[in-house]
Length: 430
Image (cartoon, rainbow, N blue to C red; front, side, top):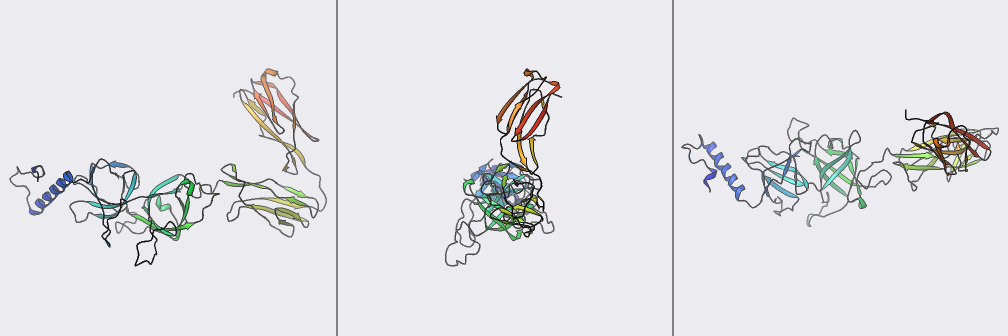
C-alpha cells in the first residue's frame, strides 16, 4: 500500500490504539477509492437543504450493486449502494435525495451509526408526482413507483409483474408531499396514454420518524394507490396533472330568464360547457326542475304544467358544476320584451385604437340570431377622423384616426322593427 496514506515521518502516529485503528482504516478506504473501478467523480449531486432541491456535486462516490437479502440475486440498476469518502462530512439519512444519470435517487437505508465510513442504499425515482400547491402552483415531486403486485399469494412462483391494481409509492416526506391526502388522484404514463391512480382512503404512511421524537424529521412517505377512472373534463393529459381544470369548467345556459304565458307551453333547454374558455361539445348535461309540479323536463324540453315559478338547473353529472335560471308561468299573457343589446358597453374609442361591437336582438332575455343592419348616420364629424366597417350581420368595427370630441359617431342598428342608435365618442389618449 502506498505510503501516501500514512504519516510515516511522525515518531508517534497516534496517541491511542483506537485513533491508530481509525487512521489506518481511513487510509485503506482512501486507498480503495483511488484503486476501485466503480468510483464516479463529480457526477453525483446531493440535496444540501432537505426538501429544497438545492443540489451540489460530490467529488467522488463509490457505487456498488445491491443483493436481494432473501434470494442473493443482484438487483438491477434501480438499486445502488453509495459509499462516501472520508472528506464527505454529510451523514446520509432516510429520504435524502440525490441526482445522478439523469434521475433522482432516494435513500431507503443507511449504514452510518457505528461505521467509520458512511454508506447509503438508494433507489432510483422512476416516476414523478404532479399536483398543485396551496396557492395553485404546480409541484413536480420525484417518486418511486413499485412494479410488483402487493398481494400475489404466489409462494411457489416468481413475483408477478403487473401494470395495474394496487401499487406502492415512495417519495420524500417534505412540506410539499405533506399536502397529499386520501383520495388524491395522480396521472402517470405518457401524454397519449395517461393512467389515473388514487391514494387509498387510509392515507399515507408518513408517521415513521427517522429521529424518534421529531415528527418533522426527514424520512420517506409511503402510500398505496390503485387504478381509478380518468376524468377527461378535469384532467390535463398534456402536462400530466389530475383535476387541473376543476375550477375552470363552467356551464352557460343559452335560455336565460324567460316567462311562460300559457300552461303547456314548451321550451327547448340549451346550455354549453366551457373548459378554460373553450367549448366542450361532448360533455353530458342533466336538467332538473325545482318544482316538477310546475315545470316538468323530459329530453331537454321543459313543459309548463301550472301557474307558479321554479328554478331550472343544468348540471354536469357526478360534479357540483351547475348553472340555473328561473321560469315563471303567469295566468295572463304578458307582452314580449324585445330589445337590441350591444357589447361591450363602451361609448368611446381611444385615439389610434380599434373597438369591435356586437349587436344582437333579445326576446324576453333570450338572444336570437336574427340579422342586424348597421348604417353610419354621423353628422358633423370629419370623415378622416374615423373608419366604420361592418364585419357581418351582428358585428362592426370603429377605428379612431384622431381625437374629435365635439360630436360623436352615430351608428343606427335595425333588426326587424326594433331600432337602436349607438353614440360613440372619439377620445384622445388620456
